[in-house]
Figure 1 (tube, rainbow, N blue to C red):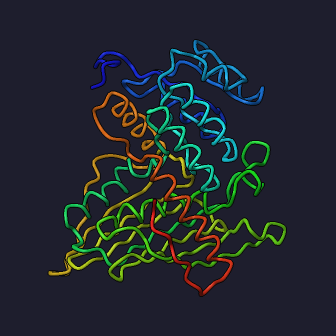
Figure 2 (figure 1 turned 90 degrees about the vertical axis):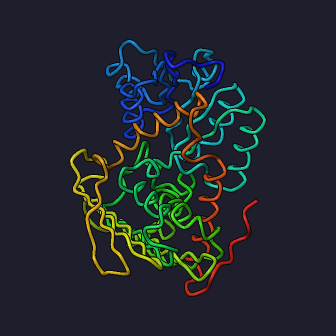
Amino acid sequence: MTADFTAHKPVRFGLVGYGAWGSHHARALAETPGAELVMIAANSAQSQAAAASAYPHIPVTGDYKQLIANPDIDVVDIVVPTHLHTEIACAALQHNHHVLLEKPMAASEADCHRILAAADASKKLLAIGFELRMSRLWGRVHQLIQEGAVGTPQYCLIELFRRPYRQGSAGWRYDRSRVGNWILEEPIHFFDLARWYLSQLGEPTAVQARSNSRDPGRPLLTDNFTAILDFPGGAWSVISQTLAAFEHHQTVKITGTAGSLWASWNGIMDRTTTPQFFLKQGSAATGESWLVDCGGPAGEIFELQQQIARMCDAVRGEQPLHADGRDGLKAVRLCLAAEQAALTPGQSQPLAAPH
């Protein structure tokens, strides 16, 4: 435990961004034991009014610079459109705050390196919002792999079938100059999970991809996307998403030398609190399969609170971060390589060794 914190002192958060997902961050911060929401910065008058109404005892500002200048804040939680990540994260780190930054870390490798340099210079924690690692479902898959449930992994499928994306504040998610690309939006979670699940094999070595859009007006914002990520030893992961469907349905299937895992999550919305989900494990030796107890509900809403709790533990020095800035950089690098690979379908894009 660090000298600045005791078991009885809450970790104080300032929240930058109060849109659809930012409001969920606020709720998680307010409800997580050991965390305290002390200030909110929101860009629009509408968001400021909504934040003030929901949290009348908490100061709300329209200027994030006022928030990061607040010495009473330990962690700045950044939940804004992608193109604003670098500016705000670097400023928060330079003001000696720890940072929890929503994925993607940034839209380019250069901006990721700028954020990492600011974190290294400040010696503050930089966590990236890969909350699926904290999931009772997706995290349990990782735990079982680590325990040897599948033996040596040989194949991994991570697939999402869902409704189209929301526009986002001022339509930013449909603006390539602000969003980067849609592979950075949700498939970035799956590239991170693939790295995490198959980490015993080493870093991925190459990627192939295909994509298309049903709207000719935005050909580079793709509704259908599939990538094959090669790993050392002949293993690979298939990462696939369609935004041309309905509801929100995610699947993970992993096979290895000793067994297999199948996880499924289904909801009307991605942020439902009443999903249907299951995890099954199978044995290669016997052919038998059985359900695995995940220990409670799974889904983004629950995982977000677990992520906040883990951030508090990391600030106190009790646990490592669930995902740090270098994990964020590696995931961005994979997404950008997959986008390039999709422009030349059928050709493999070699991946440079991480540095």
